[in-house]
Length: 218
Image 1: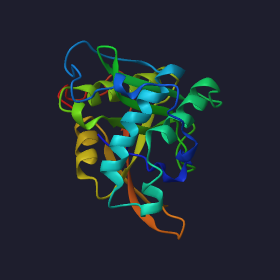
Image 2: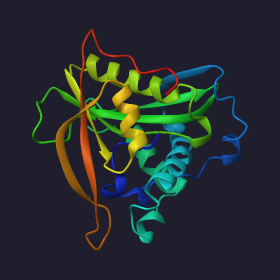
Image 3: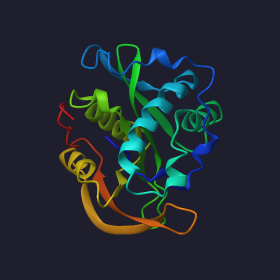
Image 4: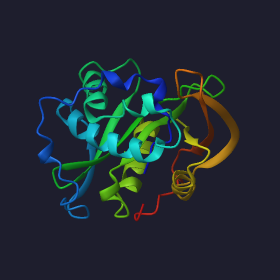
C-alpha cells in the first residue's frame, strides 16, 4: 500500500540508510504471512523502514513527481529522517508503527495529530503508510491501519484523516474498506521545484467503540 500522504514536501534527502546490511531485508524470501505483528518502531528500525518506503514511493510516484524529486526516493534518504524522528521525537502524540513478518519489517505507518487547519484539535492523521510490494495481500496493511487508529483513539482523537493521491485508486479503495470516507476536501500539493502539483483528496473516519475493522486481507 502506498502512502496516503505525499512526502515530497518533506526533505527525504535527509534520510540515511547506513550502518545497516540491506541483505537482512530480503523481501523476496520473507515469510510474509507467518508470525505477523505490529509494534512501535525503534531507532534501529529506521534502515528497514527506509527500504520499505523507497520501494513503495518509487512505485507510487513514478508518474507523479518530476525526475529530480523521484531520484531522492532512496532508502538512505528515507532512513535518516526516520532515525532522527525516532531518536528525537517531535512534540505531540506522534508515533511510527511497523508491521513485521517474523523479525523482518515489511510495512510502516506514521500517525499523529492532524496537520489540517480546518479540523478539530482532537483529530488525528495517518501521515504516511506503506507495505512492501512483496508483502501485500496477507493483512499487514489492515493491521497497520487498526493499530494506527487505536493509537490515535488512545491519544484522545475522536476522528482521523488521510490524504490520498486522487489518481491512486488502490489506496483509496483500501481505506474505504477500512471505514474511511471522502469528506469533500481536496488540495494541490507542490511536488516539484518548478511548482508542479499533484491533486490529493481527504478521507476521514470517526474513532470510537464502533470503529470498523479493516479486512484482514488488506
